[in-house]
Amino acid sequence: MRILVTGARGQLGRELQRTLAEDDVLAVGHSEMNVTDRGKVMEVISDFEPEIVVHSAAYTNVDGCELNPDLAYQVNALGTQNVALAAAAVGAALVYISTDYVFDGQKGAPYLEFDDRAPINIYGHSKLAGERYVQMTLSRFYIVRTAWLYGEGTNFVRTILALADSRKELQAVTDEIGSPTYAMDLAEAIGELIRHPAYGVYHLTNEGNCSRHEFMSAICEAANKRVALIPVTAEEFLAKNPLPARRPKSSALRNFCASTSLGIKLRPWREALDAFIFSEELVRY
Image (cartoon, rainbow, N blue to C red):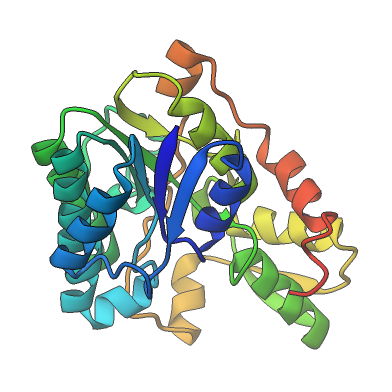
């Protein structure tokens, strides 16, 4: 297949290039195709004429989005519109990578693909706007929501490992729940998904969910880091460490559609985390 991947140097973009190595792939980063430049997006995509565009490029700094909403909407909303319009012009299907942050975290159970979206921060609103542009522009699309992504590059897992080397104790939030996802596993699931013309919305995360405290505990245990984790609520943490953007308290996702209709399942999050910790990629963090 001819596949164009945006966000080539991001965590997911790197893994997609490995996963799709047997396909004809053009992976572009910001310098090759700034998604906010509609003319350039049209030029690159029309020249390559892909069958599928995997749009993983995004502005994912949650607090940065809150402080600079114009940039968030320019990249995540209008940038996605540009990619969708270019895909439509060449007859390509589109995979749009979205987020658990399109939900408000109040459900009290893992979110299904059919649940109502109600973001509580600018990042979530801008990604939801991207979803809407995709749905309005194309008839052949996959909206893939994922969460708590980690892989090669800067992420929560590597941050915790670095902090564990420099501190004796760390605060760990007990009431923020999510679905940790290994970028390699997500890329493999996307590689399988695009072989099926079953267009729609999908949640792709490693199986299960956990709190930030449980996630941090598993990270330190897998890497044999000896650091004390101090349990705190999100409210207690923010009282001492205020952040610009609100986070949903429980934004865990359930992979219902891909698992039920296509048999696409990701391994349990703890198993995936152990694989990442012990992989050769984690030489430095």
